[in-house]
Image 1: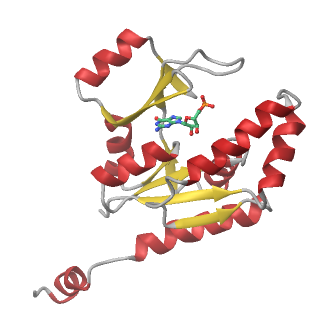
Image 2: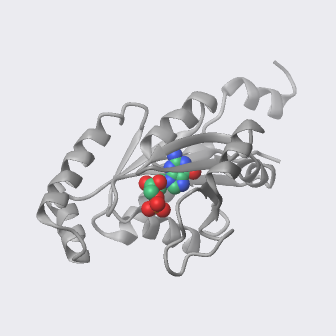
Amino acid sequence: MKRGKVFVISGPSGVGKGTLCAELMRRYPELAATTVSVTTRAPRPGEVDGVHYYFRTEAQFDEMLAAEMFLETVNKFTHRYGTLLSEVEKVLDAGKNVILEIEMLGGANVKKRISDAVLIFILPPTLAALTDRIVGRGSETEAQIRLRQAQVEEEFDQADPYEYFVVNDDLAEAVENVRAIIVAEGLKADGKDVKKNYFGRN
Ligand code: 5GP
């Protein structure tokens, strides 16, 4: 059975990457599966342990780190997040692609360990559109919004290992574009392997 590939999906907060991944999974459940990360932050209302995250204490996170259970970890907003190796292996062993919805530093670290991982960045149509969405939530002051914009720009400095940039203007179109990337990446092969498989020779 062909093993799946690892796809990282990153993008600024408010760009709608969660919605995009959920819609991709809803439309194409056979294409890939997402994994559940570990975090030390508290659950938000409606978030369920084992579904949205594995919510763990700092001490538990340290233990998992010492036991080398993580593919990558990151410190963000004073909390820690980590992708479990076991979650990734489980999906790959089932012959499926893995989607990791993680931030960019994590993406770069995944690429260092899994060289054929594919990094996809989700962009807002414009920077102003992103701010509008955050303003729409009504939860942030003007100073906080300016800080967010600066963070988006700063985050983008880490975009080098990212190979694909998908604009999320129309959700359906963005979903189709991410699917196209996953399908095309699945067709990549080494000519030598193909020759061996088809003709039984090197
Ligand atoms: P939130 O706390 O809003 O759920 O997530 C904050 C940020 O952490 C988001 O950008 C999310 O994609 C990222 N994130 C979630 N899980 C992981 C993880 O396991 N590793 C990394 N590197 N980032 C993660």
